[in-house]
Image (cartoon, rainbow, N blue to C red; front, side, top):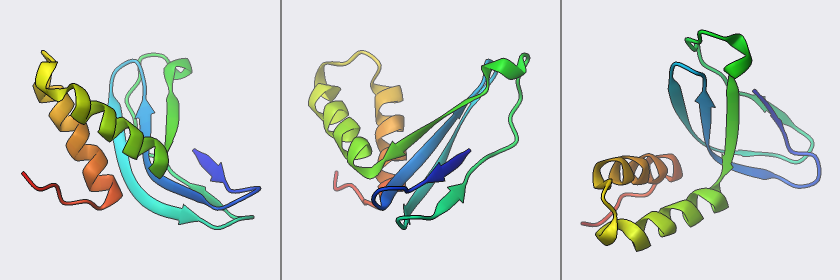
Length: 99
């Protein structure tokens, strides 16, 4: 995946790489300066090459997702997956949660 900061610097928290077989999350925690590009990737398994995809998650989006998970955590039935995703977000942002 190629990510370029054209108009302003991009604060990238993580990259989600997906296929029909697996999902890989790269914790990036990087700022791409204006006018520069960065490349991200991983070796992925896929039954169909057309199912490969990537999602760039900015730090602001990661914070919003973490806040959303925290607000729903007491009432959710999938606490294990929610906590796992929350920890991925915290790690990619460089936060150490207080429990």
